Length: 339
Image (tube, rainbow, N blue to C red):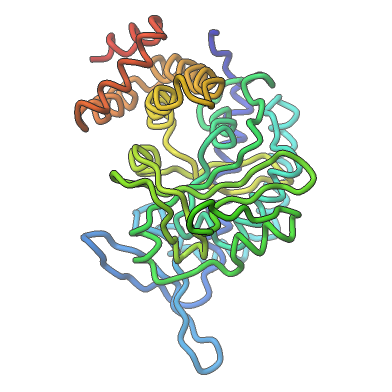
């Protein structure tokens, strides 16, 4: 299927809405910016007094973009009323231009998680819910069949980042999910809870974390949840990007880089092949093929770098990639053309 671009007006509206949401976050600065260095990285915190105690709230990694926004925090706070009106208008423009919005159940969940700090503290939306948001990031039209939900809403985070941040969500995802009528699903062996099932439907929310061999359940202290370890996930959620889920005036979330998502789908599809999730493997290949066709045209260097990165990680990685590409000759030819 060839990609059809959204209008220039839609692409500009999406980028403007994303920028305004990032400004909105920076406008919430309460005290002064504090820097902390861990493992060669700089993390920024909002340090403020609450009563007789000093508090620290994690803001993000110390990128030039975040620093510039925080330097304008007072100005951004003063512009809050006008900014929120513009955000609502831009969301209306995007709907009118044909961007497919997030359904109510997913949107309300993402909004609650965003308000609690799940994405601020390292949570990344993955799976089909993340794939749907590439229509804005890449400026291309998706049809409803491409965005058909599997019923799962998946979140991922690095265990080591969750431990290192020294901050926690304001309300635990478990509490939010129970308020939204999701029931915890204890693990079969250790009874740790890393997934919840909606009690009035088939939707499932799962928390995942990278594994490097043993795919056990691990704690994510910053998010106050446990998460199922999965091999290859570290590749997917490295260097996530901000994105807007089109619900109300937009919800600011984090998703994987599209080129990493596409290449990771090739690996996941091979892992599922021949198992109970074989139908999902076909969907994985379809999503990978579509993204690769778009990225090969619009962001070939990013795609080539991600493909080379995955191939460089060892023979098992290459075997899984080649196994999926053997079923996708057109996609394989596209990727070979980038090497």
